[in-house]
Length: 98
Image (cartoon, rainbow, N blue to C red; front, side):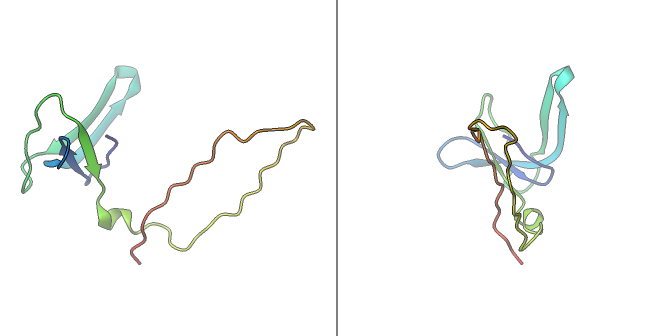
């Protein structure tokens, strides 16, 4: 699960169970570290069994105050004279709470 500080971490399948709130994200690829530090003492928090399937719920307030009403117009050009192919295009979209 990819999470940010303040997000809530859930575990299990079917109806997820609250593990707690993410308080730190520690990543050091060279050292092989990829950790989420979770406060399980929050109301409703539980210690997950090992192994567990994890799901992250984003903080709705923190995630809702991004750039509102903006768009991008993009032109892609191919400098060659042969046929080209576009491999991938990605977009991140979120619900806006103005």
